[in-house]
Length: 282
Image 1 (cartoon, rainbow, N blue to C red):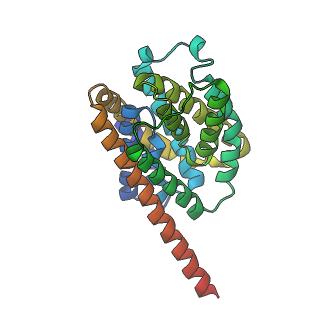
Image 2 (cartoon, rainbow, N blue to C red; image 1 turned 180 degrees about the vertical axis):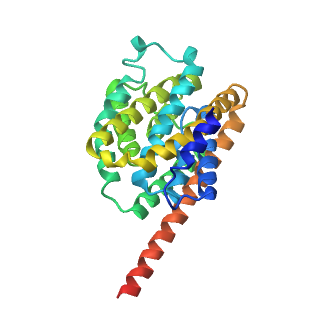
Image 3 (tube, rainbow, N blue to C red; image 1 turned 60 degrees about the vertical axis):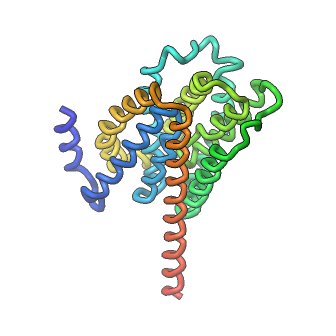
């Protein structure tokens, strides 16, 4: 059934999307789903490599939607580890979501105002710095207080801004949870509802402010990639249940750094091409 569905969708693929490009996109998104199912975050960190093939104004909304589907699947598999909604305030994801609602419109404004090469350079540099921080940070580094709802809201707002133009809102919350030394299960119970909530809000705001984003190309790519993302999410969740912490860290942050480096290379190429075109025109 899925095969027939996807084959029918392929007939609507716009010009410029060769089978090779589609295969690369599906491979990237499959790896993204495995990583996010394994770690609870980071779908768009690896998925950002799609921006080497797609313009950000198409690629970022697609990543947001696929990330939301990924989180729904993952949360369904791990619902026993998630706290009830009554426990979301003040120590759960609710304060982070509150701050994120403020940050998302700022991030979306950045998405629709900065040049493509600038977006890729910022996001690529951010991913490399984040991966290096996560690998090299001193084990003794932590925040000297338990934290409160106001601090959580500020962290959530930062994540909302980042997520608005990168589709990767979870990074700030993951860093904060690490500094607070939250157990893995408690951190995941905050991060995953936060990511899901902000992705859905971002999609809704985009649909109102920029409905042209959700055109034929977007829907065609979504139909083609969803059947790849959901099974890979389940695979990642199963890996999460068996993988050791040390191997988890190695795989996760190596993939983050690789993604960031790829985006920086692509951004540098875009800048060079622009400079060459400007020189030729002059």
